[in-house]
Amino acid sequence: MRSYEVLDTAPEIAYDEIVELTAQICHCPVAFISFIDDDRRWIKSKYGLRPQVIEAPREAAACSTAICGTEMLVVPDMTKDPRFDHSPIVIGHPYCRFYCGMPLITDEGYALGTLCVMDVEPGRELSFEQIESMRRLSRQVLTQLELRRKLIEHDQMIRQLDRARIELADEKARAEQLLDSLLPAPIAEELKIYGKVKPKYSRSATILFADFQGFTLLAERTEPAALVSLLDCYFTAFDDIVERYGLEKLKTIGDAYMAVGGVTATNARHPIDACLAALEMQETVARIRSRSEKMRLPALELRVGIHTGPVISGVVGNRRFSFDIWGDAVNTASFMEAHCPPGQINISETVAGYVKALFELEARGTIKAKHDRPYRMFFLNHLKPEFASTKDGRAPHVRYGSKDKGTYIGRFPYPTPLRAQGAR
Image 1 (cartoon, helix red, strand yellow):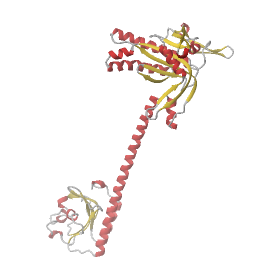
Image 2: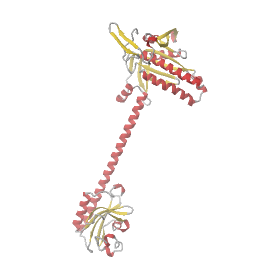
Image 3: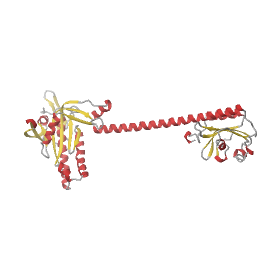
Image 4: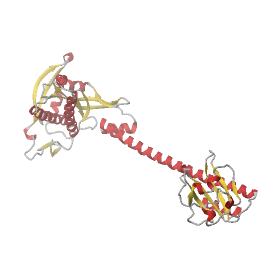
């Protein structure tokens, strides 16, 4: 009964017309459709009854007896039947005497209620045609109920689909948010649109490698939670720094940190951005080390290697996407980092050519790598005095351009990818 959600609902024209038609066919002054739940008889639609007649206790209703059988229940005189002689509609208004109730039985065999007619005169007899009409009209009541149930099921399905769509949209948003956090924005967008990322050749990109001196020994002597917390402190700061200077963090391997500039966004300033990021990373590590030493906590020293050269970038894997770069320039940047003393920033000759106009460099000479390949290296010390921070904390003016193409005055870091005056 509850699955139809019909109890205590407002009157409906379809049920009212069935009741009125039943009364007219049977020539009875009273007709109604009643439903039976656990403890009461409730009238959905009525004809010839007072408006206040809506429900009655289940045990006092004649319909409670009618639904116990499969055939029509006919009571010629209710006053002479001990089952009904105490009923409120018998001893009170409308003083019914004749009762005829057709049980409403579903195809599954559940008795839900009755389609009834009553008369104030006892002894009425219904013809075969009238009985058949009541039987057919009772099926129309059941048809209305089934339509109602299907509409309820349809609404429930619509709500479930709406919830599923919302959950799917939320899940997609979370997946896209995770993808955005794992991959550079242009790469993530390309992956969302096309489902894959085409490899890209960059003629000039700057790779930054950084790691900590003495980390292996520290890992052997420090509890895991403290070690991870320490690395998280450093790498979280590094993430903010590389993002601020337009670089892309590629990955961390143990205590090593790798970032690149000039791959996802094409510009000519990535060597300078990488050097600025390295200097700020060095300052951050020094500040954390000073604070750790005062608290007698373990401290680390950073070494950084930077090189500029051509690379190939792309996304590998189909479950855990990884954006990475490949090429000899990556190996050279790693070589720069490997041959960097603690607390220093080691840059290649190529990087030095791009940034020497803005930074104080210290030549280290030539170091041979595998296959006797020589590398000229330079220490990156700091910005030249004329480009250092001013007293008010703002970056000073830097002159860009050339004599034949005009001059642009801006603050450092510069807002456009123009080369600094004197840089190659």
